[in-house]
Amino acid sequence: MSKYSMHLLVCGGTGCKASESDILTEKLKKELAKQGLEETVQVIMTGCFGFCEKGPIVKVMPDNTFYTQVKPADAEEIIEEHVIKGRRISRLLYKDPKSKEEVEDSGKMGFYKKQLRIALRNCGFVDPESIDEYIARDGYMALGKVLTEMTPESTIARLKDS
Amino acid sequence: MEKIRSLADLKKIRDEKNKGVELRKKGEDAEKLVQVKVAMATCGIASGAKETMEFLSESLEKRGVEAVVTQTGCMGYCYAEPTIEVTLPGKEAIVFGNVNIKKADEIIEKYIKGGELVDGIIPVNYETIDSKE
Image (tube, rainbow over all chains, first blue to last red):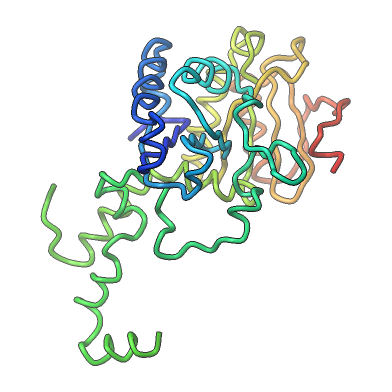
């Protein structure tokens, strides 16, 4: 069983990677190792968060902090301030374009508030290279159900109804 | 990886691997769960906040309480470390002081599970930007 008490989700989408998010991931891992926290904090490279204009994105879970335009040079501060001392780094938080206020929680961002993700619900949530994480989020469940519990006729009927 | 031969196999893998992503899922709907913040500044750590935090996250999971345990900075009550803030869904946050493992156990059993207040509450004497909204 993993003992991770914090997850750092780093965006690995095209836009963020072009802005050095893979170097950032390596630096975060290195800083964690330096502090002896590699067993406590997990760094995961996820799929696109859909907010490329503000990339690279780093999301801290479970406190749901959303950092934007994070540079590899910010890795040390994130580990020392946020991970160890529990203080959010305000200069990296998203600022609401209208009110100019800092938004700590991505759930409160106008951009995400109006979205209901269906096919892309796992994007920016799981590690796309881990099949285990996909299965943990009900991956292949529909296929399993069709093959074991449904008949060809009922499957076609369901598709037509949807 | 083993081959999946039935729906039951698939469900078994799903349930086993769920632990790995659970923390992220909880973070997304933290407001519906019990939220525990452990003050983890120098004063807290020196007084055993790390042990308290580990105990809290392990025990809450073992006792089947859906909770998010996070760390926070110094709450300013250095005389009463370790301090923790507990928010039950839909209720005001309550700060407890001098939370060693014994106290943490009492807080889980009495306050978190039963809603019954226990000794050691620190009256809140500050405001946050959130509470002013």
